[in-house]
Length: 413
Image (cartoon, rainbow, N blue to C red; front, side, top):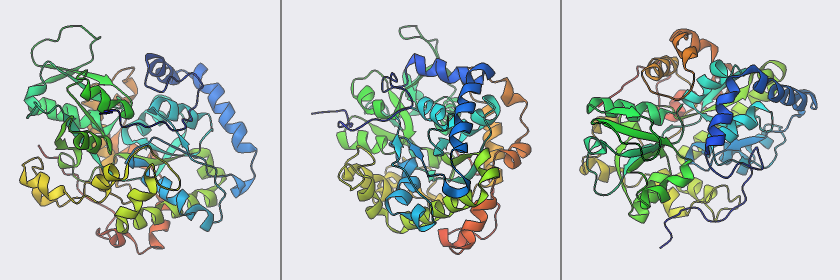
């Protein structure tokens, strides 16, 4: 049985020597993006690319990872929603690690991306690249999956768990769960002994997590779908907790654009956002069709994933079984395994800043301590475009939400 869920498919990335994984070189390269001498040439390249187009003539160049987080971007491309808004598009570019995607975005190789919500903080305030969030890409859609012999968070003591990136909601929620069980997250070299109460965290590309769990090189992983569903279908692991069952309807990935495009091409930014809002609404009402569209047998072959794996996530037909099994603790939250709504609630951004300060991450984190949560909610996010786009589809009620643009963050155990 082949335990690697990745069939052969064309891989496009920002660098020819990327090695198809989050290597140490990737981490060092990404960490170097906090240096002005490293970022400046990328910014110059991005500015030069942007100046080759006049006004709204700039094509939509999507960058994405093969996870369900990218769904609205890919649905909008496949259903020609960008073209319906009068925009040109290029074929979306698939990346295998967040490091490669971030670098390509800063260099202007791609101009519409989904980034992990904490990564948007790092990009704007850590690397000082002027990027802004214009909408949420999805909510929920992640889980902590562990080896079959592990039945509780406490049993992760002394073991290794994989995360997709230090600046991820997955890292934040995992460390919250560990603290609740008296455990401490650390990052130790392979082979170094752990002290009592420690759990070792390692960064792996999402596509490598299922095979790593099958090989027992990690005891579990916390990541976006459909890799949790893939581990379930292959019976190499089981879901211990859904991230959305810890932070209700949290945003995992956010639609991020370069600030220069918002300033110089506001109509282009509006049309991009219009298409993505319509894609999210269509996805909510066409779950199985969305799974077919994204699958490795779909017309666009956007991901390497089989239809049964994607259907398990997007159709969410088995969520009630998790409630019966006690995996879902907060049954009154009435959530989907993954859901879609575009409005970036300020309360979430504020809580994200506070939570990230309590989370262990690699690299220089001094910029985090200087961030004021309410300032970040205004400065990082530009909601002008998504508010206008929502008006054209019936507002937030079209997504089953209150028309009020506020909410209270709910974090459970």
